[in-house]
Image 1 (cartoon, one colour):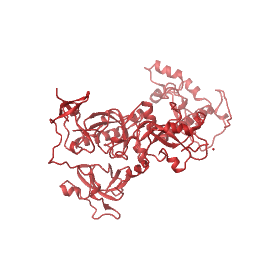
Image 2: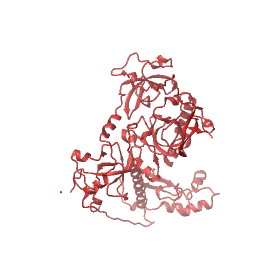
Image 3: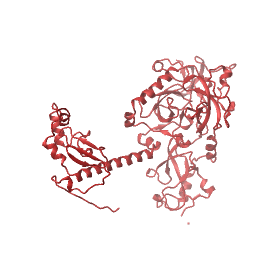
Image 4: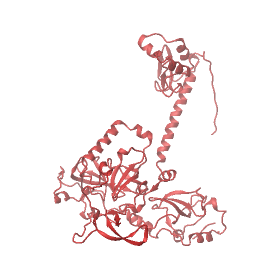
Length: 553
């Protein structure tokens, strides 16, 4: 199992007195723009860009050299004078109204050496470039679930909560303390080597790993997607002929690393041998591009229309309506969504359908086989089913040695979600977007989803088995783009038209609440009684379920 060791810079400065004239400055290229003010001629590298006029004395100069956040004054004295004498109009305003000449102070300030002005302007441009580089670096770095979870001590919803997601039904016993073999990044060898690490914390598909030998030292802890190609069960290196080399930081701790590993791994859990195969199989999707389906018309939710599968990402389909000539009129949904059906579904049940103007299918397009669509789970109506009011005998949860008479009160599934759990959720107002989100409230089957960084007015209520919810790390695993939490600045910079558009969409969805069967009114949620809208019954729920049982006195 163990196969280890057998710029130079140059400072320049220039100075000039306040009495230096403009003619004493070396001539600048003739193609630079020229600005004329009060008989004085000044040349700036960017024309009027970056210029400002003092509202107190009328002095014209480089904006970056001015004072106050708004760059309204050329000096502290002008700023204070303006503030202490707010009843008087500024000199610039008097010039515009009365045409009086500028004061002697303004003339003196305007004779400031051009070299100093150009130096200040160059510094201003350099500052802008540095700010642009900083912003670019932040945006390229992107959002990190690991840092987000660690810095705020968040908890992520387990993968087993998402039956429609990859490995959702076969996640098994993957938990903390499971050992895996991963690349050793703390090594100076020219070839790729591996070492054993243990799972310290799980967050959806992501795991915080710690190399064996570090004990309680988190110095080299790192986050990694468990379903990634660099994660292997213990024993993979031996079977593949890959070397196991301890990290350089702890090489001195033990002389017999083989004995150390034997002791540490005895009785420990690891990934199943066929784990990578199961991951690959769970990410095979039957829907393919060019398949034709019937999907809800996003502009008229009471009818369907024909669309063509444009792309498939992690089971999510980008559907382009068949009549879209430029292929921009699209709709996103999961392949298990109740909003899509096989061709002919609307006619078979008498649902409203928009006929296509296209008389025949385009080359390469073909109808999706009906068996690929999710069917409502049938319930044997002849047999009995648990119902509210039924009596039974149940174990007392406060005294496991006794059995009491009890009454069924509610058909609630063991979905596994808890308030405060993090996940990745589809923005139903803009279904192409998947955002960082939090479960903020749970009422039986319904989850209130809050988009991190946004106001509560954008929260959504979804069913616990909705295919629009995904584990942390799903976007990274499938290659889908994740929308990070909205920062304060991005929320403030959002234009009013964009907000109005989002609110209009929200109103549109509220107007069609009969179609979105899993939406619940706030007034119903805040009340004592909870009535579910018509839709898939609790009896049609997949997976195991439990019941809310009230014990009899």
